[in-house]
Image (cartoon, rainbow, N blue to C red; front, side, top):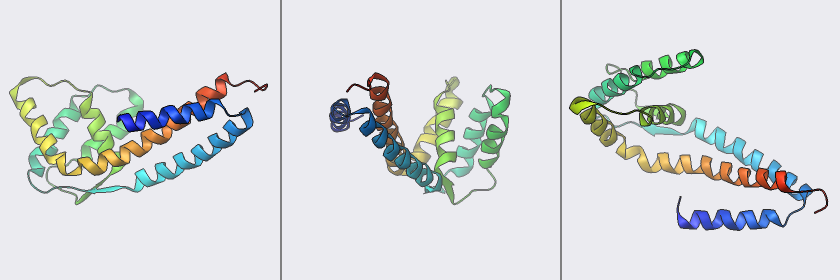
Amino acid sequence: MSLDKQKELDEFKKKCQSMTRAELEELEQEYIKKADEVDKETAEAMFELPTENYKNVAAGIRMFLNKQTIQWQYTLGMKVLYEYWNPDVQPKEINYPTLDSTLRTIGELQFTGYDEWCAVVDINKFMEPLRDKYVEVTEKVYDVAAHHNIIMDELKLNTPMK
């Protein structure tokens, strides 16, 4: 998080600390609406996929997804994610939820050996053109969540006498 963003959150926290419970509850409703808007926006966000090296990248992503040990309730989602990255059928675009799930899942792994290290480098290089837009969309999600958490924390501390 940038220093500017942290400063803005600190100022927001101070503002919330001076609010009454009713004001905080009203503000919370505003942030719930903002969260709904951001959720809709992120669900609809599309990213144009590069074409260069897609086949190798998709095979690498599948290899890493296939290494995952998951709980029963996640099997359908992982199956769909795995099938999305078909090396023989390149989509032109990817939606934010699929991209985010892919990056988060792979980001939790550890990699063994030269072949896996090379696959990670290829995936990173492939994803580079998507980076700025991905970060922008992700930051919106985190920003609304951070503000809402501040409100919720203050509501927990706030007494009716304030």
